[in-house]
Image (cartoon, rainbow, N blue to C red; front, side, top):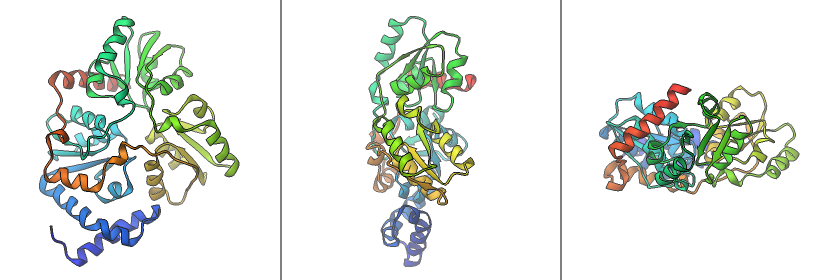
Length: 331
């Protein structure tokens, strides 16, 4: 596509109003302007929307995304619009969730990006757990494949996991796949939690020492951590929860300094959207989320490959839908 100099400069300025908060220069925005203009034009032509997880890079979030948030929330947003195609800038399991909730729509992924949690457990692993623990309900975290969701009893998010576990009529619960989140759950329930051995490679990196160092360097700082962090970290922070919980806390807090023990994309997003607050300390990069680049989005809109189109078997679609429906009933 060809754009005028005026169009390109206007687009660069639009990008700069957001990206300057994460130290992008006007020249960098000019480099990306032709691509964001073309992607946004193709969206209209192809009747598509772009969903971007908060861990995506700022150019994607503020350049081309129609909706930004966490995985399940984005999939819900997609059900509310009429667009026939969904481009999900995320890891693969998140796009599968979007397909489960939007079965009649085409769901595309710009790259086949994995996830340490989702890849840590298979359908066969879940069936073996059920065999070894007869009658014990399986609660699966949303960070799992459609196949795993399909053989689980109920799916949960970081925001509703405790409420759902307390509502399940069982003294024992199999929780998959995050062992650190399972330990955090166990600290707040009398039920016995049988855990799997998966971890999020982003959140397992944070240590209690990180929190102590930041508190020493920045007196009065509020520390927020994802519940995929270790219990030793969670015990030391001011709030533990998912990405939406963090945003809600930040919106309500009158504090000025914060550490976010989560993925760096979330910190970038908050630097843009809450520029009056200061974010300190180290974050952690997700190598899977960062695989997706602007050129991948452009290519998938132009001509998706077979691998980029989310296709689920009917049995996985039905089974996973049941576990998500059960989540809604219990939450």
